[in-house]
Length: 440
Image 1 (cartoon, rainbow, N blue to C red):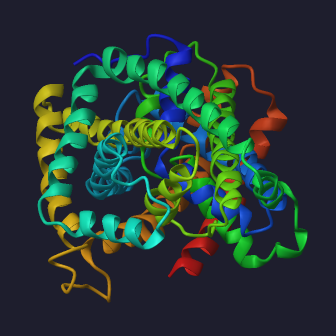
Image 2 (cartoon, rainbow, N blue to C red):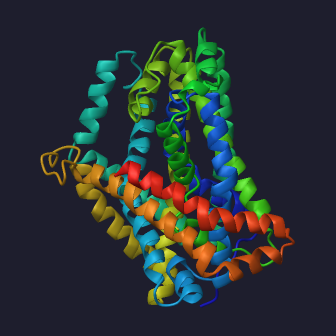
């Protein structure tokens, strides 16, 4: 069957950036940056994104375009029989992440409803904590919203590359930035908001430690969707005349900008009302509703905030599903509709124990972790770093002439190509192995 292609370079850039911009950018980046040196962390994070991150992203895109295939097929065609399992690892990561990510995506839909109904507009943190805990531990409600979120993602992927993913990205990505800017302006007008802004932006190089560097590297690689087969799959839909370097730089710029805007959106408002900026996921579902409850027009801003979260979750989930669907379509010669339905059914089923492990199945653990936390740990701390190391080795050592040919054809200079090869051969494997050892 013929390979689909993006209808425009803009559509490709927005879709690729959307894959990287997820819920983590909204709740994780602000507090990680703020508690790890503020401006110092931002500088180091940006440096990693524009060096090793850029090299690996370009490598993935070049692999996909050269092979004109999915993540598994690209490794097979370019590397031979010993390498397809690396691509399969990326596909597996996407499937596993999407199974519990869809559960969390469902929470955002539920909280849009709770915001509209006004049930979470209270400044009592205990009430909000109990509301959140009662909801996620309920055996039925989260599964209904999990199914709704998976259905939304399925509807987009069924539309195909251009009519589904690209068209959605052209609408949702601008909507995401508009919503963020509205919330930023409102937050910065609150009394005490400047304390949060300074906490976020002031560089504290005294906090630059080994652990901080590991956090910055891990967040950079995760936020750019590297080692998961996403950029390989999206790269396989890129036309031969599309400049990969410029497109990659735009994707990184949009991703970094979103993380930065998330900090401007969350931290000033949190500081204005004296809440803890390091609350993690609770920052999203407990702290922020308390903030909105104390704002004039807080209900409107609560609805906008959770709509923003839904948009961020959906742009990421679409890319996760597309990676798996593309592989199933190519490897098993199935039409898009059948492949998408089969994968979505599997995702929904795997999401059931993930959701129930937060409630009635919480006593069932493996290595002290419930099923939800186990999926999160294995994908983020084991499978993704392993995939990134092998990707770097594959690009830098096994198929460098192919990657070089893809980039040289676009006029990239020999100096840049040598630097990229050095990052892939030596720098990236060492850095990522350090992250893997640290995580384990």
